[in-house]
Length: 347
Image (cartoon, rainbow, N blue to C red; front, side, top):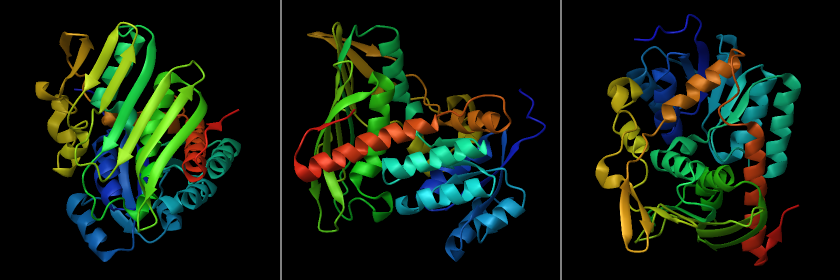
């Protein structure tokens, strides 16, 4: 058994809604390198949940109170339109920052926060936990190992069937919400983008849904990305096509979210954390030939230990903050494309 670090990073959390409660608090609490000091929330109901689920954590009224209590770092999991303001405020208080997606509403705001963190010498990272999804880890390994040959097309979908109420206002619409992960994964896999074309449906709520984004990467490869809350027949999670075959994942998304919502965590599951049942494994296909590929385990639990190491000056942040600017730039172009029905070329 490894020995816990003598000086874990004192972490705070802003927001205890779905994201804070399930995607951040359990993973911070499970990391030996971190201590969950407390949560900024004024909701009486959420304070009660916090007390029940993390008895050692304190509820605070403000970021100032959190900083005064000795926090060194903070994770921000609040509505999308508050992310930039809270990120910048936390940086001004001297806190290292993890900000949930969408990192900012546009590329200009993302760049301003990144440059502020660089000036202040503070670690800053977008919470792109989906880089450590089991199926995407497997995709990256297959591409890196050359199993698919030269990759020409990457198809990726976040599709579900919950048309009512549909996308939550807190996420800023489907393009910003699901698209932040979809675009980030495409950039990680295939690199910079040359052109963007997008379509969407604007719902009565004013929020976009049924988003389709086509990217042409500077390498010539293409990404086809889809996000929807209204798709009754969700398509393949991934189809990655190369010169020697395609890798296909058909079925439910990575199971780490379901595990966290069910009350499990890396602490309770141990080595079984992130493992996918064989029924969820993808296949390598070449015409009539189909071979099952064991899925690598999901590894969301690696994010906070890596960020804590960066706070201690012992490594890089797990996701470069400037990657958030690159993602926001593509999303800005997709918004313009969908609004004006044009292909947008990026310099």
